[in-house]
Amino acid sequence: MCYSQTYVLICFLFHRTNCHSPDSVSFGSMPTWVTLLSVPRGDTQALVCTIDYFAPKELTVNWKKNAHNVPGSTDWKPESIGNKFSAVSILNVNNTDWDNKDVYKCEVTHAGTQYTKKASKAQGNSIEC
Image (cartoon, rainbow, N blue to C red; front, top):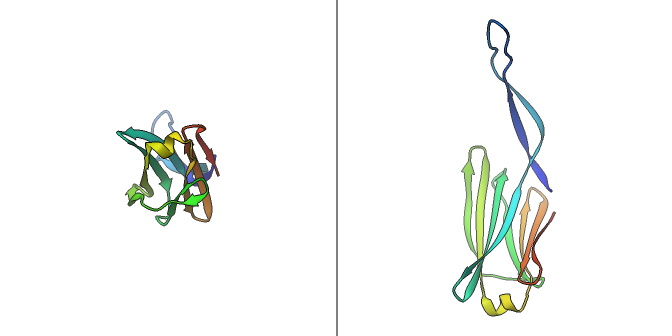
């Protein structure tokens, strides 16, 4: 799993007579989640790549089919969720290509790290960092 964010733990200290203010303690990292789903839509497959829990806002998303760049995705700009961001990219693939067991990749580059999620009818989905 690839990690790039930080968890925050809120601690409350209880004593017999009073409760102290919470303290923030940082530990570990929270992963940038990249998920790739295949959703059938009539004569196409919608490949939905979601990117969650990342900061800063800047990132790039590239789609590949059998190692070749594929244009034509629909991308939503990153939206903030608290101090983190979330984004979505969708690539529509015709069922002929999907049934031919072509391999599609959603490649996300964020803060110098590349996250790759693969999907094909033959292989199912897998993740690489």
